[in-house]
Figure 1 (cartoon, rainbow, N blue to C red):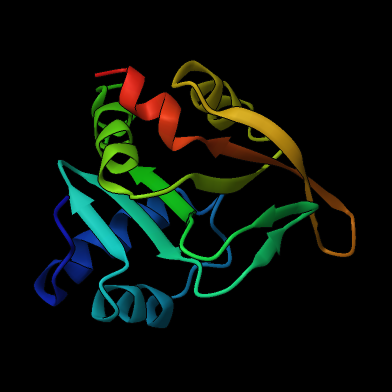
Figure 2 (figure 1 turned 90 degrees about the vertical axis):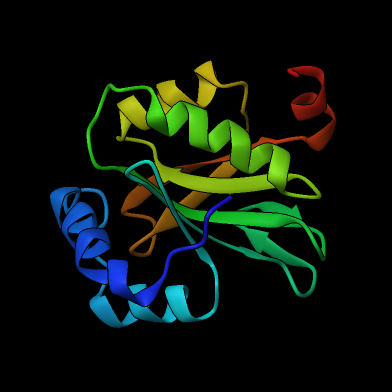
Length: 148
């Protein structure tokens, strides 16, 4: 996987702003911090932000163990070109353990995408004191290995 570098910041910012409907909370200081901490992948026009859990935690009602990966955002410069699927599958292979993410339930395209690539819906997550409903997905490491 190719980690982003500071000189790519403007390109990354434009991609996030293109998807502002789904990422209204993403600020430029967050983008810069994720690049600095080496938690932002930028490859073939696809952005993935993530972290590896330093301790046991929860995403919504789903427990995540230490060392497992939490995917924060994925965004593609050009929708429909297949790059998001290709890079995300590489990301799953690159991660040492299971990968979890949460997504807004009304983001139907994203939910369908996660289903297509073999992620499993395993829980719920809500934002804005329950006003925004979400889903939690997982990609088990054992499943990733069987695809290759």
